[in-house]
Length: 525
Image 1 (cartoon, rainbow, N blue to C red):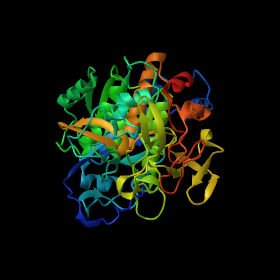
Image 2 (image 1 turned 180 degrees about the horizontal axis):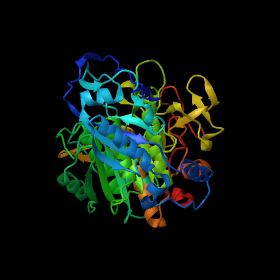
Image 3 (image 1 turned 90 degrees about the vertical axis):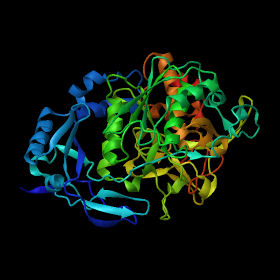
């Protein structure tokens, strides 16, 4: 039976990776297939209203989303017929998420999708992968948009940076220091003039692709802060789970940073952590699971993992952006760290790279600053840039996503060439304290530490959004258009650069529109 290549699914080996031979034909794996959306014109019209800043746009209830914008039953049926023909089992199907997850062997998937899965080895590990496109039979052409999971290379990295050895934390350093060394998240809430509130009744979803948390650490941390700990729940996605490694400088550092920062800002909120494998399929499934979770119902999702756009397939970036469009339609705010590798995003090819998923136009990209403060006042705030070894806030221009309407007319300041018109999606949108030298007091695996990175900015803003949602009594949803219409609700950061891009008045590709002025944001949102 004739097969057709799935547009945007082309894969190349990781840089430096070489095939060690064919993948074990008996190895079992799971593959996520995304089918087309119904009601695309209606969703586009809904999102256009939000993009133009129209107030009081009614969000679609999660319970109604599948019927309005989910999968066509016939498309899911066609995938199931295809699966049966190749001996593949249907593990899960969800019309709202437009997802069908299939299970089978390498040999079965090789035949089903016309691929030749290999085992690749590279410096630092190995993965199962492929070269070239995924191929679909004619009867699925136009119905299936995305196939993920054949390749299980690690797709993202956590965007946090530890500053000092575990155990050396002055819990009150930030409050009195003229050149602050570290802050409790609650101190930053004061410095950024966050409105009163604790997020009671809200749910903050956190996406994690490794590591885990221990309740004993959470309880000890909030005891240090003199606060009752928030309720924290783990949700398993694609067999991911809460699995602390015991290494405070490993992925546990990301998990605990996210929980502790968001929880300190909004201790009345329910923190739900969605654990998934670090693959493109696991990452996407975690996001769609959180967005369509009718039990926990997060009104804001915080993402602190990502990677340069060049490491993603076009189909994956399109699928993630579609998931963020669905979230916006349902009134869910999605915040993503913009990376810690400056304008290169850690790629050593001499080019600039935007970090994804922060570069998706339907999520809010979070950049990094360095804060100096005295008592309850910010003395200065500049772009976080500690050089090649210390890290710098990610930011730049997408090579994939078009310029969104709410960024039309902006300029980007090149460090050596002056301002030029912004031609594609610019990253980040917003910023906050991220420099490890003015980092966050956290507790990880029994150790008190100071951690920075744009990873901290996403949960900081997530806590702020939860506070605003709780006070408002309804979710603010997709915030980018409103932010760009109200730039004075943020502290404009005008000092520093992240490599190729310099801070400037107004939006820039280092700190976006700037850091939060919480009380003003509460008013405009």
